[in-house]
Image 1 (spheres, helix red, strand yellow):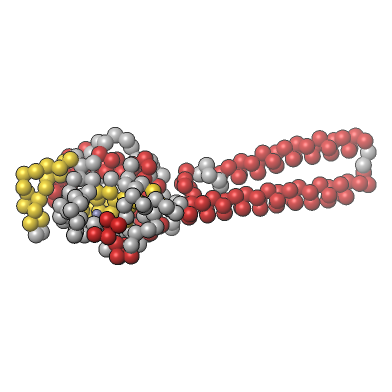
Image 2 (image 1 turned 120 degrees about the vertical axis):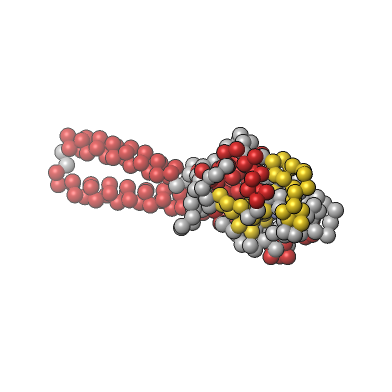
Length: 269
Ligand SMILES: [Zn+2]
C-alpha cells in the first residue's frame, strides 16, 4: 500500500515534457491509413470505368452513351459518399479512441460511460463489482466522509472525519457504470500522514487519493477521463502508458517509484 514514495517528490513542476508522443504516433497512423484508402478508392474506380468502356464499345450509340454517362455519375456520387462515411467511422470521431491512445483490449470492458459531475458519493452504497480492503474506506466513501484510523493494522478510530474528494466518487461511479471491476485497496487507510522520508502531506491523508487493486481497465478509464475528473496523478508500474503527472500523460517516473506501484494503481487529485 505504500504508494507514495520519496521519489515522488522528484516529479514536481518540471514534469510535463514529452508526454503525448504515443498519441501523436497513433494519429499519424490514422492519417496514413486514410491516404491509403483514398488511393485504393481511386484505382478501383479507374479500373471499373476502363473495363466498362471496353465491354460496351461494340454497342455504343448516342442514347446508350448518354445513359451510361448518367449511370456512371450516379455510381461515382454514391461511391464517394459511402467512402466518406466509412472514413469518419474509423477516424478521430470514434469516442473510444479519444486522444489517439486508448484501445479496447480483449476480455476487458471498454470505458464507454463518461464520469458524472455530481460529486455525489451516496450512489456508491452496495454496488456490485466495487469492493474494499478496509472497513473505514468501505463505510466512508459512500458517505463522502472517511473516519481516520490508526494502529497496525490501522483500525482504531481517532474521532476524525475526512471529506472524500468528490471527484473520486465521480470516477468510481463512471467505472461502475462502465462495468469495470474495482477493488479499493486504500483510500485513507494504510497511509502515513507524510510521504515517506519527506515533510509533504500525502494526498491519501486528506482524502484526495485512492489506491486500486491492479486492473488495466481502471488505469485506462482514469487516464482517458483524467481531464473530466481533474486527476493530478496516475502511477502504475504495470501499464506505464497510462501514467499521469500534473494532469498530463507522463513517462518520467523513476524506476524505483514504478517498482513500488507494481501491485496497485495510485490515482491522486
Ligand atoms: Zn497511493
